[in-house]
Each structure stands twice: as structure tokens, then as C-alpha cells.
Image (cartoon, rainbow over all chains, first blue to last red; front, side):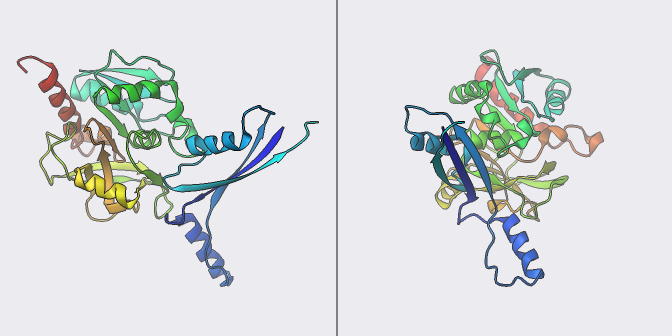
Length: 84
Length: 228
């Protein structure tokens, strides 16, 4: 069994209006140290043991559905866990 | 001419679309559920607005993998006119039938109001009844209509006259180059954020959208009906 954590964020080149609004709010709270805020998505996948390469499988899912690579970047962590 | 109005779970402009085709345009229309696996009997495909699959993950991302979308791609490749409005446009982008992607509106608000559109290309199968530079009054209703594509794609869109509609005056959503609607290189797939199907009767504020549907029919007749 695998636990996969997928993080999706807008690409650097794409303006993030939500992140900008949150940054401004943090500034108005006097957290002026904050230089940038990027808002993204976090997903957890549980994947059963498989003979196919899990890394390849997750990459494929990200490319095809989980992220839109025109505007989003993705990264993921795969952890092998023993099913209870 | 017979149109398919594709209905996904969460579509909500399908009835307006059907009304525009059937009652205002006077052509045939049929609702087609997202599980359909054959669109051979239809001459044109319409993807209506709404919130397919609750806009989960991203607008259009889940609808794009519906069974019917395989058929929509097939129809597009066969040269049939395919029109995606609002959520329909988002689905066409996710499906890769049109280039680019949608971001949240610049001001993070859902916008629902009439806008002025400029017809940038009046020589398409969807705009041949308008004149170049016409300014038309069509409503928008979306939270994610902030069009984006990379520079290379933008240059290609410009070079091939694929930008069909732009917002006139204020940019309502932050869309790149004020883009409101684009067409594919083959000229048979159009996506646009504004709702022409909501502007087909002057009693309701504008009938400027009707000419878009008339253009589709006119173009189709010219190539399919002898002695048209």
C-alpha cells in the first residue's frame, strides 16, 4: 500500500490573484516580512500494491488529470505503508 | 441542421441553449446525456455553460473524461462545428481541443452582467453573419474566465486570427489580451466565455447572440445543402 501526497501550485509565471489577496491581508496585519503567497491544492491518494511503477503511475495521473500543466506545477511524495 | 446539446451533471445553461436553437433559430436540437457514445446523427455539437461535476478539481477537468467527450473529439476531428460556451469553453480547454487554460477572475468575484464584445474575426463558421469590428452586447456569468496561454501560443493565435471575440472597454476578468473567445486552427471548434444563447431575444435585453447561431447554420448549408 502506498500513501501519496500531491501538491499542486500555480506556475511561477502565472499570477495568483488569491495568493496576492492573502498577502495583502497579511501585510495589513503587519506581517510585512511576507514577500509572496502562493495558494495551491493538496491531495492524498491511497494506492494499492501494484506491479507497475508507482512513481510513473502518479506522474501520469498528475499530467492527465490532477494538474493542468498549462498553468500549474505539481510535486508529490510517495510513502510505502503496511496495510493494517 | 441538427444540434446536440450535451448535458453533464451540473450543466445549467442547457435549457437556454435548447431554446435558442429550437425556438429562436428554428433548427433541430436534442439533449444528449454525458454517457452517450455516439453523436453520428448530429451536424453540430453544443457544450453549454454551468458547473459540470460541481467544478471539482478545476472547471471542466472531470467532464473532459466523460464518455461523450470521446465522441465530441471525434466530431471535432471530422470537421463538425463544436461550440463551447462558458463551462463548455473550459471543457474544450481541458480536453485540449483549444489551447490555453482558465484562471480565477482577477478580482476573485463571480461576474454576472452584460458586456460589450468586439468581433475580431468575422470570417469564421461561427461569425460570418457579423462584420469585422462589430460591437455586440452579450452577457457573461463566470468565476473563472481569466484566459491564459504562454507567449508562443498567443503568437500562434494572433498569426492565425484565432482570437474571435475580445472584451470591449474594461477587461472584466483579467483575461490575457482581453480574450473572450478563440477558435481552433481548423476553424470548427469555438470556445467563448460570454453567453450568446442568453442574447437571442430583444425582449430580454439583446438578440446580438442569435447571429452566431445563424452563422453556424449558414456555413453548414453552404457546404451541405445543394442549391442553398
